[in-house]
Image (cartoon, rainbow, N blue to C red):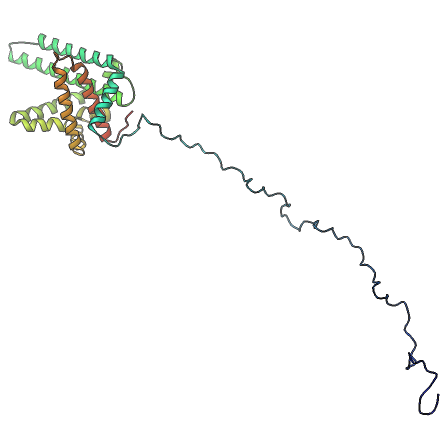
Length: 286
C-alpha cells in the first residue's frame, strides 16, 4: 500500500475487500423451482361445499317441473236439459209443453179421456130431484173433479222432473185432504168473485192458478199454498197473464172439433202452467 491510502493491489471489483457471498444460495434468474405439487383438483372439478346442499344436477331441467295435480273438475254444462231455467216466455212454455206431450202422447190422451168419461158418468148417474141429494151429488162430482185436476198436475210435475209418467204415476200424491180442502177454498172464493162481478172471479182464478202445484210439489197446507201461488204469480204477473190468455185461446180452439182437440190442449195447458210455475219459483226443469 502506498502513501496517501491507495493500495494498488486491491481488486477494483471489490474495493472494500469483503469476501464474496457464498454461491448457490439463490437460484439464477429464471430458474426458480416449480411450486410444490399439491392435491388441488383440476379446473372445474372443485369438491362440493360442506353441508347438506343438494348435488349439482339434482334440480329438474328447465321446463321439467311436474304437472299440476289433475282435479275432478265437472264437465261443462250440456245443452238441452237445464237444471234451473231462469227466464220465462210464453213461446218457450208452450213449446216445452208440446214437446213433453208429444213424447208421452198416448198416456196423456188416455188419462184425459178416462177423466172425461168418469165425469160424464157421474153427472148422469148422480142426479136427483131432491135438493139435499142433488147437493150431495154435486159435492161428490166436485171432489172427483178436484182429484182429477190434482192428478194432471202430478203428471205435469213428473214431466218437468224429466220422468215420463205412467197411468199410476198421476195419482202419486199423499196429501189428498190438503188437495181437497185447497180446491174447495179456491172454488168458494172464485164463485163469490164471479157472483159479485166477473172480473174479481177472473182475478181470483188467475192468482190461485198454482195452488195445487204448491200443495203437491212443496207439500204446503191449503191456505199457505194459496198465498204462495198469489205471491209467485204476482212476481211475474205480466208474462203469466199473457200465457194464461194464450192457453185459454188454445183450449177454445181445441174445443171446436167436437171437443176432441181438448185431448191435446188440456195436457199442454197443464204442462205449460207447471213449467211456468217451476221457472218462476226457480225450481228444477228437465
